[in-house]
Image (cartoon, rainbow, N blue to C red; front, side, top):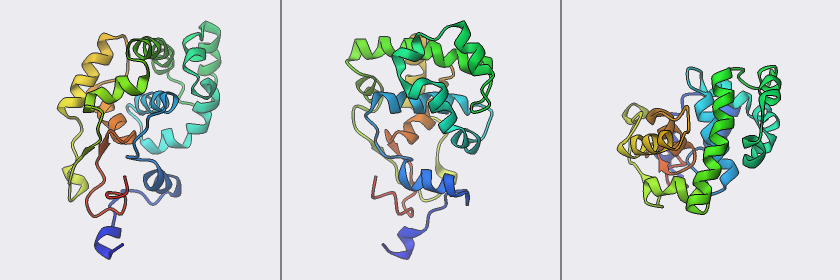
Length: 189
């Protein structure tokens, strides 16, 4: 790897954030549980930093049944109370209730399309979109595809799925490669 390609303008020196960038961000995901996890975490981030959510990722995994979508969809009022008392997650009632509702909507989408993987990846025609940005300043907050995804998700009853959240989800799950061209990960993912 050349010096030019080794430079990455990732805006963090936090080891967990760097590890997330270096190992996960932008890697194409096709596992339904992992896709639901990222949709939930991106929605939980609304109004907060990604670092806050990343630091609570293990707490979310434990609180939400290791992302077992069927189990989450069956959560009831007692589970909402339990989750709102859990310091391992962001204790926001709207976000907790949305996650449970989103699990039900995810099951419906998976039943219709055969999997969440097929459902989500249709928004990029089943192929990773590769951008060629030279700086982080060029990255967009949303795209036509994330706007379309957001509209579709909302129509299906999903919440906390605005176009910016959807685009962050697409970046995180590798539907879009938004590593800048000088980043060593650009050619790897």
